[in-house]
Amino acid sequence: MLKIAFGSDHIGFGLKKEIMAYLTQKGYTCFDFGAHDENRTSYPIHARATCQAVVSGEYDLGILICGTGVGMSISANKIHGIRAVVCSEPYSAALSRQHNNTNVLAMGARVVGVELAKMIVDNWLAAQFEGGRHQERVEMITALENER
Ligand code: RB5
Image 1: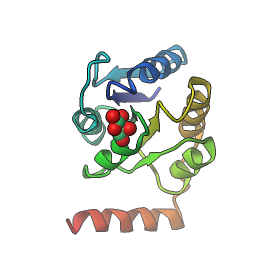
Image 2: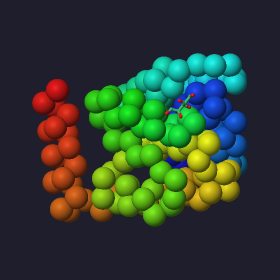
Image 3: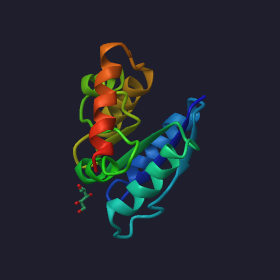
Image 4: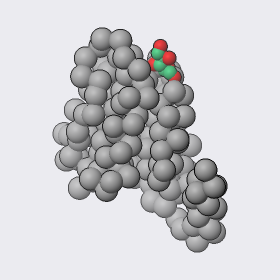
């Protein structure tokens, strides 16, 4: 079963805990890289810790939650080896895995409710990277990253 790293800021904390409980009950191994409470914090801190656990190979995938998912996804995409998507519906979540081989999903706790978030996560986890012509494009993304 996949190992999933989680991170949030204070706003995403509650939804993160709901999704962690949901996936743990489904048999996934989940670990929380903070925030650990609802005290004000800054999303890049927790995006960094969570994404480092993914790029190191310790965790297979990451899920990040802030108010909109935007700050988390921008921060995550600054980290070498991370392809993060921010989603508020399941279609893009699934396609982001099939075509873009995303390894981090970001969501906004002020944007999606708990049940929609579960649906997004289910679709993201169920989808498989299709490779083929998409492999070439993902390699082009890596080449862009290596220009930095
Ligand atoms: C925090 O106020 C808020 O900016 C953060 O949760 C997130 O929405 C940033 O993108």
